[in-house]
Length: 295
Image (cartoon, rainbow, N blue to C red; front, side):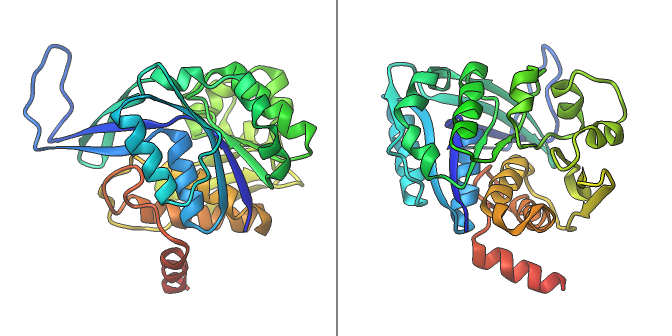
C-alpha cells in the first residue's frame, strides 16, 4: 500500500439538513444540525488511511476547541500529524446545507491560510519518504506550487485535486502528474472551453475527470478515452465523495491508474451511503467486501 503525503485543509463542518436551499433573503427551518470533521486535506487523509495507506498530513489548525478535536480525530484514524501546526488563526470551518442528495457549502479558511511554503520546507523529509503526494486548493496556491516543486525534487508523483476551482498556472500543471477535477473544475483549471474529451486527450494519462455516479474518465497513454464505470448505491450525503475518491486513488496508486480509479469509484460510492464527509469513508475490508459483491 502507498505511503501518501497530504498537503491541505482541516475544517470543522457545521451541517444543517433541510428540505430545500434558502433563496436570497429567505429564512427556512432545518430538520437537523450536526458537526463533522472535514476539510479536503483531512478528508482525503482519512480516506487513504482507512484504506490501509500510511498517511502523513501537512496542515494547520487553530489553538481552539475545534482544532484540538480535529487533531485528536485524525490521530485516532492513524494519520501522522507531526507536521500539523497549531496557529493563532481560528480553525477553518465550513457551513454546509444538505437538501436531498445535494449540498451547498460556504468555507471560512481560517488557519488553512497559514499553511506556507516554509512549513513545507520544514517537512521536506516527509516528501522524501512518500510514494505519492496529494494536494488540493483549500490552502494558498503558492504553497501548492511549492509542494509540487518539492515532490518533483524528490521524484515523487504529484496528484492535484483542483478544488475549489481556479485557473492554474502553466508551471504548476507541468509539475502535476495527475489532475483530478470534475467537468467544471477541468474547464476552469485549464482555462478552456473545449469539450472535456478534448481536454482529457490533451494530457494523456495526466487527468482523471470524476463524473459522480457515472464513475470517471481519462485518456490513456495512447490518447484513447477510457471510462471506468461507477457503482449504483442509495445516496444519503454526497459531501465527501470527491475527497474519498482522491484519497483512495492515492492509496491504490501502486496498482496502476485503471485499477486505482476503479477502486476509487467504489470507495466514493460507499462514502455517500452515510452522512458526513468522513462518516461514510470505507475501510479496506468494507471496500473489498463491496467489490466482491459486485463481481
